[in-house]
Image (cartoon, rainbow, N blue to C red; front, side, top):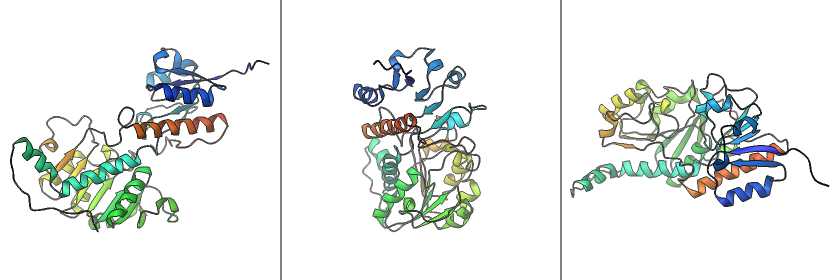
Length: 327
């Protein structure tokens, strides 16, 4: 007897490789009808129950049947900052796909700063053979990680190889030192920030962008840090007021900074940060998504498929975004 049960319409907005399409169809084809990006029309969103990808706000106004959006990003700022996000839509992100690759970015760039590589890169362009005798090592340093989610945990795990002392600061209250935070030597909530900042040799920002974290590392807090401390931000640009950071760097208060995110993106061409030898800048690429890294891309699709299975079986979804909290 033919199955006449109505299929759930799934709109997949990112470009899918044939292998990924086949995985979706093989796993879920009996219950789902898929619309892939090349077949998407302006009206596809109106009949979709599920969207994988990042629909525009204008599309959401037409999404009469939409119940769930599975993002392919870890950040959900695009939606949490909307004046009105439909209460009937559940939003989930791809947290868990980016921690490993971002942690490598962080450690690689700390080493680059400690060994003076930005200066050597500049000298290479000018064919200068000049040895810088000053260098440092991550070994044994006090590391303060702001944010103990997927990215923070992965950084903490890799920092243990350098026999560092890793302290975590998290937004929410600390109950027990859970197994998930085992790579942190200490974990505190935000109330401990002012006590812990002056003790850190390396400060790493990987907090979500919320009202609570906006401007958290202001001028006074930057100046409370050690004069030779290194600052890294791979979370949200709103964590550090740009002018406060520029001032602290111009006053040579910090050893250097690694910045992948900024208050304003793209970073304005006339920003003094571009010209600072002690600053490594990248254009929000620490955690590449589709087209950037095959392993990350595969992890994103695995997260999407695991949540799809949960959705179809009526189970609670993973990585639900709490809109009222901003992440």
